[in-house]
Image (cartoon, rainbow, N blue to C red; front, side):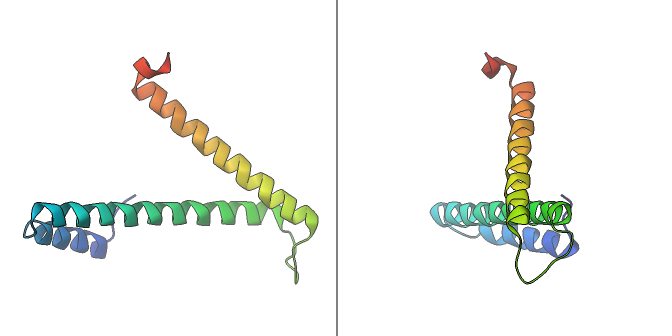
Length: 101
């Protein structure tokens, strides 16, 4: 993912300001930043799953989802996550062939 200008500016400011902190505070700030980045990535994945599964499963939105639509969304989400995990594991195996055995 490419950073926007604002994100690049913020990242540069963070790096400059972290250098001014004591080591423990710098570690805590860095950990917080990493956690926030992970949350952002998870939210992006959830959004992508929602878009894909909604488009696949809901043809005419109404007041409520039908049971078939609910089941379709649940199955679609599970398949998306299973596939994503498979791809991640496969990439890890390719980059770390020693752990494959």
